[in-house]
Length: 173
Image (spheres, rainbow, N blue to C red):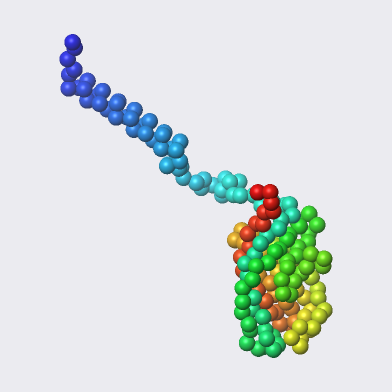
């Protein structure tokens, strides 16, 4: 039997350790335990960002209403509620169901401002003793943030509700 010299034993140990380390690293990467750094190039980062759908979507939103009791200058009543909202990017319309709603039968005009969908429509109705001249709501598609406000005849804007929305999926699941 051949005897190993100290030099060949060190070399054999080095190659065995390198092989074990390489196999362990490959296994850790394949299992998802190791991940490589994200691309630093802005174009590569934009290309890897999630794409937003241009289809019509329905959302379910949990919102906090801030409604006046005796006029828009009075102390508001605050409560939470769940409502549905919809955005139709093909027809450029949107709606939501709620207290002062832009309903499905009288949809508002949809305009995109970055990731924010802005839906508005003119209005002419009396609420709490003041004339409401416009309604609008926004849904930020990146964060899910929902806001709704009304424009009053005297030029004031009154925030009615704020909340968060998520995608609504109908059965079958």
